[in-house]
Length: 403
Image 1 (cartoon, rainbow, N blue to C red):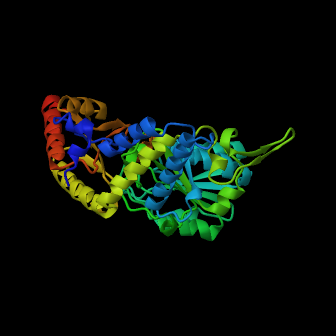
Image 2 (image 1 turned 45 degrees about the horizontal axis):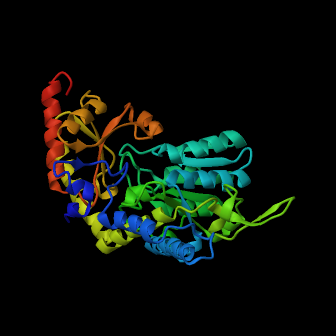
């Protein structure tokens, strides 16, 4: 699979080795064209006008929702709520469902690998409600042991929140098993899908979770749009997250009634152009086939881990290739990851360095930061060549005292 030519930014920069797709992905021409086409041919406010252009915009917006829902195996498109991304989607559940259903003395379970966006909202909900936040510690290989998580669940557990794929380790978590634990305890399961939606075949109903959050910009789509997929009964029972605009049914002087799903949770002017762009992104991925996406990334991960493991004083964090998605986090001796990233940047290699918005995980790894290379559909072996060469340059520059 060599799709670099489909991505204008990469095609125009042949010396660039982009290995930071876990932060945000590059965009194929098909997505850029879809966004431009909307603004050139259909730009009007959806739902607001009776004129033809507004109807066209409304049709494009709802059509995009149908296509994205189908990509995630969602049988009821109205249960796909558009948000700005994973962070807003998780905050929506924490604020709306959590605010209405979590009480003093209740418990919320998370894992020690969570991104801040799937940790802090639950931490703050627990503080506000005087509930207890319980953290499932990780195994030495950076995985979650289902039995250990189950031991934390009690009759007071209301929420189990966890990532499908760790953004810092690449670990693929056993979603169905964790969802079953939540269901058996009468709790809800909230799955952070930011790192799984771009890389794995996802069927919402098959996963068995109550809520699944994702971000468009990590899966070839535009920034500023993502979604929350939820069970209809739960969404219908939740109070609105924001008020105003099209989420209204009737406004009386004393009170207001709410619109039906999905509008109830989509206050304000819809992000129609980006919805159309995200629909083009999932169409692009569907044309490749998510099984093929996984096969391609697994081959790259296996190669990268083999070659990086051969470098003296380089330590890789997380499980083996079969249990991880397209992420390799590592440290090189006592060279700070930021210094390593700067040297790699000089060779045209883009990696992430830092705590990856996962400070609780970094504490558990006993490191302040790691370097992270992440792979996607436009990467190939030449990107690994450049990564390894850049690391060897860093070793030569810093010398044996550091590595």
